[in-house]
Length: 123
Image (cartoon, rainbow, N blue to C red; front, side, top):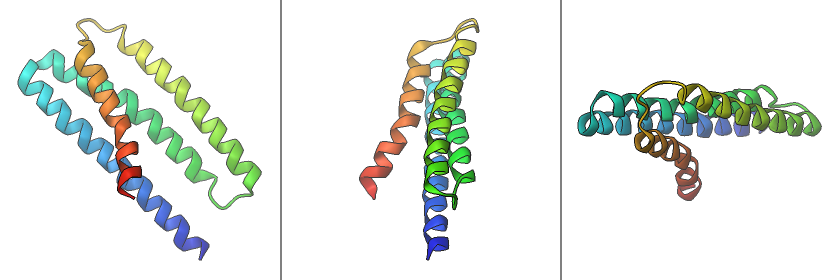
């Protein structure tokens, strides 16, 4: 029974990650068509700033599956802390680059994060 729950959770996480990638690609392509190279680069970087920390968190939590509750909770806290630090570091590095466009950067970042909310609504 526990194996089925773990497989189901992994499936949900992989779907969310896949939808995030799809959202990032579609929005980056849209910004590339409407605003050119600098918009596309900014959009892709915004997507990366959302995706990379989320992937880190998912892998960190997945690694703790099947352990005792205390270790799982500790893994969640460590994963979330790492996710926040990674996000801050990525934005710091992104804002060091020349010609970054704020609108596509933040639009794709927010859209990639919103995939979680839509996933919750669809369940």
